[in-house]
Figure 1 (cartoon, one colour):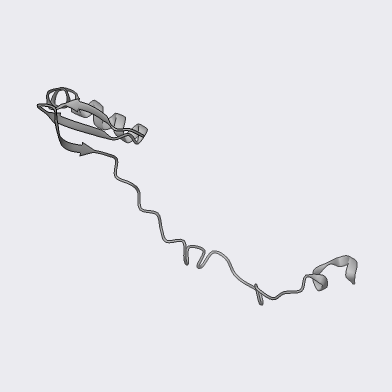
Figure 2 (spheres, rainbow, N blue to C red; figure 1 turned 90 degrees about the vertical axis):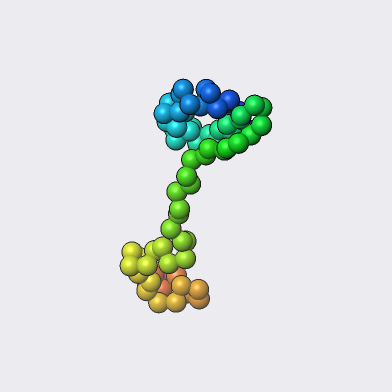
Length: 78
């Protein structure tokens, strides 16, 4: 997504509304002064919990999860 570029005077007049738009859309905003970029505003990315260990305490393994034989589990095999 290409950032929107606005002059500092517009940012000063509309900053609260622009912040809400950035938070809602996830867009970026580049603020310019006399045509030169002076700041970039973007939403803070939420940190995701690490994937490794995320199921700890939730999922319980029973036996070997790599080398297993399901033939004993099927009712038709009994």
